[in-house]
Image 1 (cartoon, helix red, strand yellow):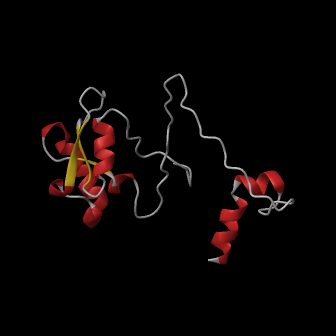
Image 2 (cartoon, rainbow, N blue to C red):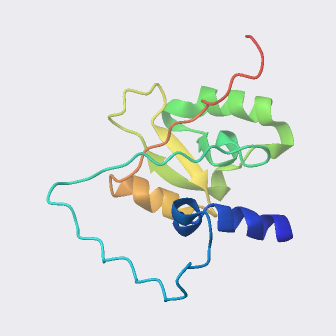
Image 3 (cartoon, rainbow, N blue to C red):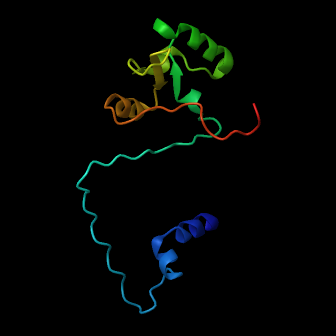
Length: 135
């Protein structure tokens, strides 16, 4: 716990700008001015780099049926017991994405991911990351 607190303190802007979390003059620090919205649209890419038990195949998977039956079969074979079943997947329609498979599903516990995707405010970039060994 002590290490976590030290990391949080070291990550604060006040620590980096003054090398101290205490004010030298004893006066209270003034609050930062409220940020004003930009005049132009702004979009950012937020990447969740998932390691271990929550990898891309535990978030997004092809669904069985329609144009993805073969891909789902390959997915199930590769994942074995860890494969998500169709009835546990929230639908993700990738029509128009130029994918060979357009019928995906997202883990049922990730309803917000489905909503963000359906609203056009998100995309899935699966199976990328660090290369740990040559292929």
